[in-house]
Structure formats: structure tokens, C-alpha cells
Length: 328
Image 1 (cartoon, rainbow, N blue to C red):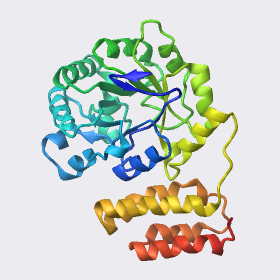
Image 2 (image 1 turned 45 degrees about the vertical axis):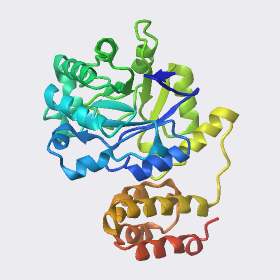
Image 3 (image 1 turned 90 degrees about the horizontal axis):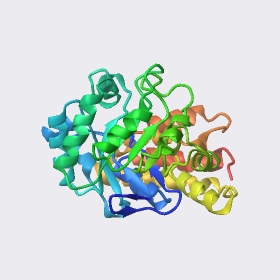
Image 4 (image 1 turned 135 degrees about the vertical axis):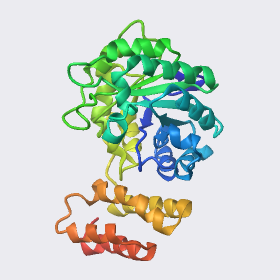
């Protein structure tokens, strides 16, 4: 499978773009565990044009994480085109356009998944960006706006015709947000359409190695994109790769192994943006990590971790967990 000149091995796994999750620290960590491609947090086109520091910082790239895509979103063709030109200067491997974000403050204002209600404008944006940049342009979107408007089978052809070199599809409508289950049947229909020549990347509710293999085998997608299943669990890529290669689940490692990965991530964030911001930026991963699930009487310790505002305090709590709860 290829996107532009980028070649991928069989069964490629992509880290989905997620706000406040896929920062440079997390991307490089996921890459080390086997992610084949990673995506930036999604970046506002308007903010890039205005040179807002919080947005421009999201374009920082480490060569160790390549191939990497910078994802941008907006609602008007000209600003998105101009932002894509700015993003290209950061030298990503791919420019990705977000037409899938369901969050109200984005979609209700006509950005992200909001463009599923204005297909002509979406196609105008794709065409404008393809003409403006030299990097491959890809698209991420959803099945449609709501259950009565699941238009992805037709839309996929239109996106391809505009020059996009790959399409990632989340198996929900915008109206669903993240409720219910992702429906991969339409993703499979898109992939099996003989007119579709670009890679189709499936996304939605992939949280286990077994489900990943099923998505490849049953729906024929060229790549699987994993989002929320990676939060606090960057090693999921290694687990899936092992399963795809060997046909069996990887043996669980000791608790300390996974704990050290989380500590490594926290340290990377502190090195990147300083102690206070680094700890704040790590909290979502700490809160969501599966290694802390099913530990009896763990609630107060978790609260203490999420309240800690210095590295010394946070690591003192983390380092005490294994002995305090008799974990192997």
C-alpha cells in the first residue's frame, strides 16, 4: 500500500489524530511501539494563519516519528489552503484534512464534520489544497451527517476525483458523535468499490488485536487507524503487530513495565513543554490507562495522581502503586 511515494508493509497501523492526545511525545512513543504512521493533533487553519503559538507548536516534528501527517481543519477554502501551505513548511510527509471532527464548537460552525452538510465546499477545499501543496493530501471524515444522510459511498469517489491520495473513514455519523458502535460495513463498501483506487483507512472502535485482524480480513481496508484505544496504552501497536504476525496474543508483561512507559511519557512531556504543562498534558493518559483498571480501592490514588502538580509528587505516588496494591 502506498500514499504518494510512501510505502507501507502489510497490515499498516495508523495513530489517529486526537486533540490533546497525539502530541509529539505520544507520537514518538507510539512509533517506537510499531505505529506505521502517526498524525498530529488537529490544527485550526485560522490559528495557523494568525501564527498562534499553541497551534504552530503542534507542527513540531521529530524525524524519528516519520511518516507523519499534519492535520488541519477549518470551514472556508482560502484559509485552509493558506494553512496547508504553512503546514507544508514544517515538512510533514502528508497534509491531512479533517472533515470528521464532531465536536459542537467545530462542526456546528461549519468546520470538521460540519462540512458533511456542504459537500460542494468540502470538495472545493480539497481541490484548492491539492493544487497549493506538493505533499500528498489525504482526508479523514465520517459516514455522513446523520443516519438519514450516510453519503460516504458516493463521497469517497468525489474525494478521490479531487486529488486526495488516501481516505480515512470513521464508522459513525456526526450525529452519533462517539456513541453506539462504529459501523464498518460502509467502510467495506467503499473499499470494495472498483472505482476506488486510493487507499481506504478504517477507523472506529478498534481496541484489541482480534478486532484489528477482523477489520483487515472482513472489510479489506488498506490500513487500520486506532484512536481512543491508544490513550494511556501506546503499547497497543506492539500487541497488535505480534498478533497479526503470530496468530496469538502477546503475553502480558509485569505491571512495572507498563508503569515505566507511562513515566517515560510524562518525562517526555516535561522535557517538551515544562513541568507544569507537561504534567497537565499527561493527565488524560494517566486517567485512561488500562493498567489501573480493576485495582481494588484505587480511586483515591488515581485522584491523587491527577491532582499532583509537580513531578516529584506525581512520581512518588506512581512509584508507590506496585507495592501498595501488591501488583506483579
